[in-house]
Length: 81
Image (cartoon, rainbow, N blue to C red; front, side, top):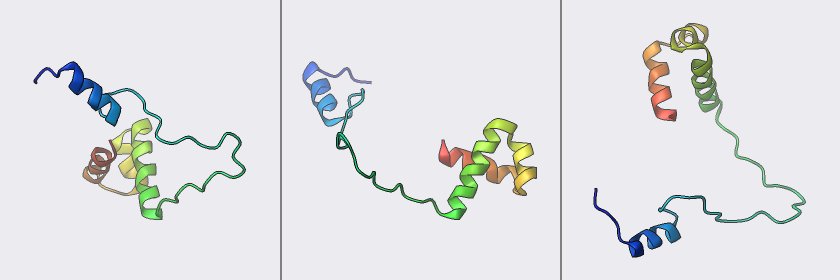
């Protein structure tokens, strides 16, 4: 890995790639109504529920509960993490 110069680090930081948290857009100070969050498709929501359950209970128990193979649960976990 090449050591970056101070100038390069500054440019990366200004563009948002140099680490740290950068606020891109602020919400209005007193918003009247926040924009609605996008809804997930039912299939995606099911997969996400399976992945979260596998974190708590383990892959084998999740595969039995949701009637999917362990390989499928592992594939979904790899995709989401």
